[in-house]
Amino acid sequence: MSTHSSETRQSGKTSLPNAPTGQSFHVMAILSTLMGFASISTDLYLPALPHMAAALGANTGQVEWTISGYLVGFSLGQLLWGPVSDRYGRRLPVAAGLVLFCVGSAGCALSASVWAMIGWRAVQAVGACSGVVLARAMVRDLFPQDQAARMLSLLITIMAIAPLIGPLAGGQILSLGSWRAIFWLLVAIGVATLAALFTIPETLPLEQRAQVPLGQVFRGYVTLLRDPHMLAYAGIGGCFYLGIYAYIAGTPFAYIEYYHVAPSHYGWLFGAGILGIMGTNMVNAALSERFGSRRLMKIGTTMAALAGLFAALAALTGWGGLIGLVIPLLVYCAAAGLIIANSIVCALSRHPDRAGSASALVGAAHYGSGIAGSGLVGILANGTPAPLGVVMALGGAGTLLCMSLLSLRTKPAVPRFIIKE
Image 1: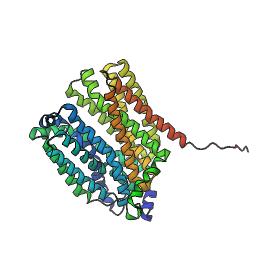
Image 2: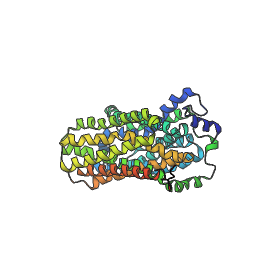
Image 3: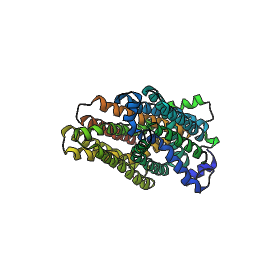
């Protein structure tokens, strides 16, 4: 590590390496755009799913596989970009990913069958995840741990706007043109972001990169997997995502079909969860440097565990009706602001020399658990909200369990002898 970088981290300054302080806002704006690719790639085209099914001669289930294919590509693709960025820096892999994202988006726009669409969605996801996983690593390159948690919380807050406006924007595009126009817009966004990428500095200087063959960098995953603290941090976020994706997959049925909420009102309930996430991320951004990431993360895991428990009770017994279910679900969502950014930053701080690989491993755990959460809700479906509540309870309990194991491992040793004066 260079002297300049060491001094910057120790002093806690947020000045960017090799760049004027005035560029900080510009850099963070581009990083928030990169992190938003996870949302815009899917939320923008959700209103077009019925039109796509009709145009491609597919049924509803087949078109929904375009989302599953995207999640698989997004989860596994991160494992590629992390080590590559540790070896070659951050900007070049992000640029390559954006090119791949543009190619995948164009392929989606030109698809003539649902199977081609699923394949191109996977390509699109592998490209999109480069910006998400490496934006996190770039934040860790620039800031010390608690300050990085604050900045990442701000980025997640900005990124949370995408699920709110994505479906609305997609609906407007659909009213003016075909569903293919949505994917051409994604191509344009990818090209614009690629151009903007080269206006910011490289955050990983040459002397801090892995000076070994790329294959050996990939073997660094073995080192990460042997670190129990790293696994605990990844487990905290992964278990939380198990519940969050159960929420995403299960609430449309629970609210609309079971409790007869009007489809037009479902968006308001879903949006309330997003607003809760944004609110607690702002709290985390304000308090992380004062109280520390670990303490706030412990509060968040406790919130998630209790909310999951009450959600399961409400779903299994019907206690409180719709409101009895909605309140714990919203509390669970709000816990994201105290869990996600802090668990990511703590994991990356364990291995700052492998921040890209660590970010990739954590991201793969998050989205892999998300696939499992949504899948479990489908497998356990029984016509009631019970599967939703049970899976969310499992996710919340898992976050608290991983946090407890982490606390046990970092508990100060008890002196063997007590010397009396």
